[in-house]
Length: 279
Ligand code: SF4
Ligand code: SF4
Image (cartoon, rainbow, N blue to C red; front, top):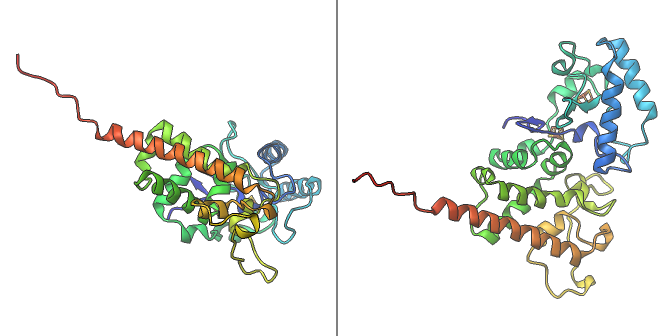
C-alpha cells in the first residue's frame, strides 16, 4: 500500500503528536501548526539552527495529553493555503537538508515508521478516506488512524444502501459531502470521548481493551442497529456522549449517505440519450 501519511490531497500528522493535547479541537490544532510554521519559516536550514528552534518551540507548548507519546514541534503546514500538514524538517520541505534528527525522534525512525493502519486498511478503504477528507488534515488524521471507525462507517452506508461504497461514487458531489459529514462525527464528540482515540485505546497493561456499550445499564432492551459505529465513536455516558442523541445523528448521516448513493446509482442506470441519425 502507498503510505497513508501524504496521499493525494490528504495528509496526516497524528503520529507526530497533532492530537496529543488537552485542547485537541480543530481550531487549536490549526493555531499550533500556524505558530510552528511561522516560527520555522525564517530559520536557516542547518541542524544547529533547527535544533535550537525546535527546543524553543517545545518549551512554549503545553504538556501532552499522553506523556508517553511524543509531540514534535517540527510538524507544520506544508502549503500556504494550509491544506496539507507535514514535516517541516523533511528534505522535500526544506529544499534539500534532512533535519528530522532535530525533532523528537530521528530521521531513521521518522522515515521507517508506519502506523498499524498501513497493514489493516485495504487500498480501496485508504483511497476512500483520502478522497473524502481531501485538503482537511485534521479530519483525515482522525479517520485514517481509526480503522474500526472507518470500516463501520462504510459498512453502515452499504447496509442501508444495499451497495458497497466504491471510489467512483465519490465523483458525485452530494455523496462526497454526505460521506465527509459522516466521517466528521469524529470531530464532534464530547471532549475526552473514547471515540476520539479509537485506534489508541489501551488498558492498564498497554493491551487493547474491547469496547462495548452497556445497553442494559442505559435501559435499552437491545443494541442499536448502528452498534458498530456507535461503539467506535464512544456513544456511552462514560465517554461523555449521549447515546440517544449520537444514535440519531449517526442514523441521519448514514441515511443521507445512503440516499445520495442511491441517487448516484439511479443516475448511473439512466438510459443513455438516443440520438437519432435518420432524416
Ligand atoms: S499516524 Fe499513520 S498515517 Fe498518520 S502520519 Fe503517522 S504513520 Fe502516517
Ligand atoms: S521530525 Fe519526525 S516526528 Fe517530527 S514532524 Fe518530522 S516526521 Fe514528524
